[in-house]
Image 1 (cartoon, rainbow, N blue to C red):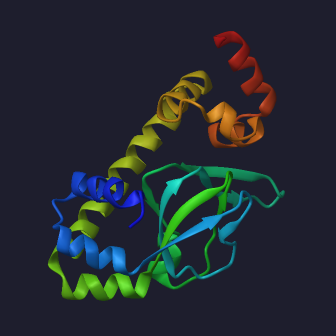
Image 2: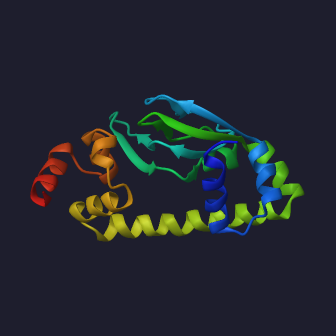
Length: 193
């Protein structure tokens, strides 16, 4: 059994008191995979069919603007579920790319198999409902941060969440997430440190 088994179980129970029996059913449909940095788990224009749970590493979702600029939407770290939910739910191509920024250990879960469990197991369905509520709240919180915090405050908030972010990914990736230039980030860092 994976080292991640207990950590993920504790994480899921923090959202909904799922039983070990039900967790084992979810665990049975998940496949742990190792991905090298730079791997695209969901590419632009691809219809997504998988849910993911990151156990090690850092991953991002990003949008490519018409001018070719990449705009990082989210940074994912252990222990977080992620997916191109809009693509899965609408059966339309993803408008975001999901790419590993470091080497990662990630569980892949087939969305159809997950939905079959939701249809037959009320605990899984309740967990899914709680997780979607969690995502909604996190989305609102992120909007408030972007709208009300300046770049220095957003950087400090990111450092609070991922203390070693500067050692994990390149400065331009951090700047993209903060929606600033690498030069602006360099100035922020020099003022702070």
